[in-house]
Image (cartoon, rainbow, N blue to C red):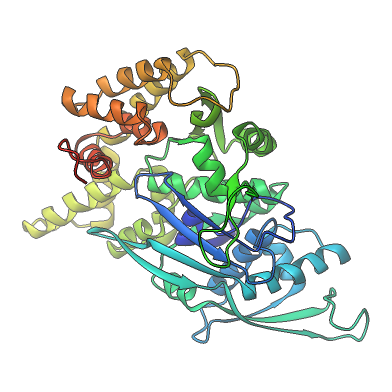
Length: 459
C-alpha cells in the first residue's frame, strides 16, 4: 500500500527555499520576480532578519511538517507534535548527531523568516485561479522537550520531541484542500535535498501544465529554484534586503545534472534536453508516462467519490486517466442523469463512460509533445556563451515551426515571435503554446499578449 506525504501547492509553486546547500552569512534576504508557467508572475520577497535565509534541508523540513499536519488530522490550533525521528523519516533525512543540529538550525530559520508574495498566492476553483498578496511565515512557535538528560543542554538529541505551530496562511490553505499527495517511498528515496526539491517543483508544474512536458528558460528556472548569490555591484533596492543575482546558467546546469540523472534513472523523467545556450537556454523536461507514482489530483478523486465510486477505485482512475477526460465523463454522466436516465449501477455507468471515451485531449498533447521534442532535437547546440544578447535565428525558426502547428492567426504568431526576439517574452513560455489546443491555447495566448504593449505603444 502506498504511503503518501502532502505538499501545499502554493509553497510548491512559489518555492520559498533556496536550492543551495550552503549560503554565506550576508545572505539574509532576497527578492525574485520570474515567470515559469502559464499562471503568471511569481513575485516573492524573503526577509530573514539578521539570520541566513532558508536553504538546503529546510525544504525537506517544511514538507515533513506539512505531511505531519495532514496525517495527524489538521489540528484546529495548527500545532504539530512530532518526534525528531519521525521528522527525519517524513523528510527523507538520515539520523545522526550532525543532522539533529542541522534540523535545529533549520527550524530556527523557519521560525524567524517572513515572506511577502505579490498576487501569486492562489487557490484553484471551478472558475479558474484566484490570486492574492500577503505576508506569511512557516512556523509561528517551537517548543522542544527531551525525555532524557543526555547530551548538551539546548541541543537536539534522538529523544527530542517537538511541538510546532504551523503558520496560519499555510494551514488555511491546507484546510481548503489546496494540497497534492506525494509518494513518500519515492520522495524519501531520493538522495539529496536538491533532488527532492526539484521533484516537488516538477510535480507542481506537471499538475499545472499538460502532464507530459515542461519547458522553462534556464535562467528563470535557476532564479526560481534559488541559485543566487550576493550582487556586490548593486545597492539594495528593498530596505533591509540585500541585492542578489542568479548565477551563470552553466553553473545552474552543472548543479542540476546529478538530480536530473537520478530522476531519469528512477523513471520519473523520460529525458531532459536543452535548446540554445547562454542566458536564453531553454530546458525541456519530458515526464515518464509509466512512472509508478502517477500524479493523482485529490480534487478529481473527490469528484469521483461523490459519484459513489469507492475511494480506492477513484484513486486508480485518477492515476490512469487525465483530469480533462474524467471531468468530461462526469459532465456527460450528470447530463444523462439530469435528462432522466436511471442506470441500475450508477458508478458502473460512469466508469463505462470514462473507459469508452476517446481521449482526444491526451492524444493531441502527446502528438504535439512529440513534434516539439523532434523539432528541439533538430536545433543545433551552440557553444556555451553567457553573453548571448537574445534568442538566435535558429530559435526563431524553431519557434515559427512549432507555432505553425497551432490554429493561431499569422498576425498573432508574428507578434509572439517578435516579442521573444526582442526579449519582451521568455522563449520558454511561448514554446509551450504548441502543446495546448482550443480554449486552453486561447487562454494562454491572451495571458501572454496582455503582458505586451499595445500596438500604439501604450500598455
